[in-house]
Image 1: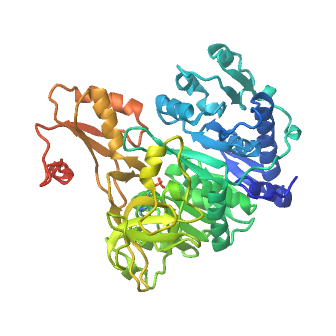
Image 2: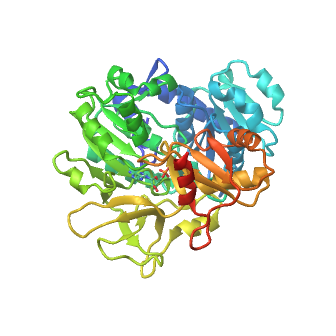
Image 3: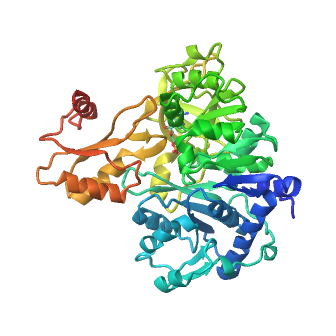
Length: 535
Ligand code: AMP
């Protein structure tokens, strides 16, 4: 085994294999895997990728491998296998509509796909009409003859076809290469692929490891889908330090209280919506979670009441609010909750987003991207080691979001978030979005993407989506308005539900005679919300 230099996303895991090989790396679906056992599985898959998907020497194309699966041991091993091979990984989610997954697969240009047992039944629809030939690895299936027969264009390998783990030996990986490619909702109707380099994610993990002093005795929650970048924290921060990643099943995720207690978690990381759910279900009772050392929230606005209840429920833990878009690598500002004085730092009932990570630079700007005076509201722009290089094969949308403000010599990412930063000792506060992006139960959703889909499907010119019902952190779901009388809304709703991931699918499509307009002649979204409120 090797100590890696330069370090990339897999390095922490490999280091822990050397120093904590017999400790548990992963606890999932009643199965526990030590570091060495997980390494063995990943190495076998990596050797198989190398043996069956040779790369042209000197090829300039970035190398990526896709993994289709839920949070199963095969999926985790698949992600590591992609990294062991020297590729970036592209997580694909079997709960998404297959057409969406196919489009991500196609656009990423992956030539190899690792599929867990739970996702195999989706393969027919994911692969339908795919132009390229893939190497398909089904590491949990012994007999793959049926799959191979159904997909003659692709090379299909099952468990018995895997190479021995010993056939894999690490080759150096460029820290500038892509560690993972994540697709996020795109306002024009096409998801954007955010490219994250090893160097970006290493910078993030280094800050986190130092701040939280993680040890091999820690046990991390793993509540996020792998298509959500917050999952990278759970996996790779734990694995960097020889700690254990505890993955609740879908059913256990519904009852997080029991899971935290039984798994003796020490590090909790979730979207605030999970805290809201736990509060509603009366799971935030005083001293309910004494094992927790750290309670971390990220992904959407964090309501004060949730933190206050959480502090009582997990009295031995420190609560932090992490903020960040995928484009700035997981999280890039944070705020530590101090029960004695933090309430007065809050605005709009939300916990501040605090200070930038070391090395990250903050600019709060007006519409011309000129810095506003301290204490004034503006759009948050950030730059630094966690700034990702842009969107996959999409120079136009990259240029729109990654910009060089006047008088600056470096590129900043435009977050689209409205914030205020004073020059006193008060932390930066989050005040909302500049655009039509919302968070639904923590998932990032461009309302424009839903609108584009409805316009296309219904052949109408205008469709307006609003988040509804509104919650303190975002919205629970979406309602779409259209004004064309001839549309069958019930049928359109069924089509929308089958082509969008569940969290993006509208709960209702409503016909109204005319759209209300605001003073600028634009559709007045607030008036649409009032219609819903009046119901
Ligand atoms: P994503 O790329 O899915 O992580 O979504 C990024 C967006 O989520 C940010 O631009 C914010 O709008 C929102 N967000 C993330 N963390 C926070 C937070 N702690 N407070 C408020 N909004 C947040």
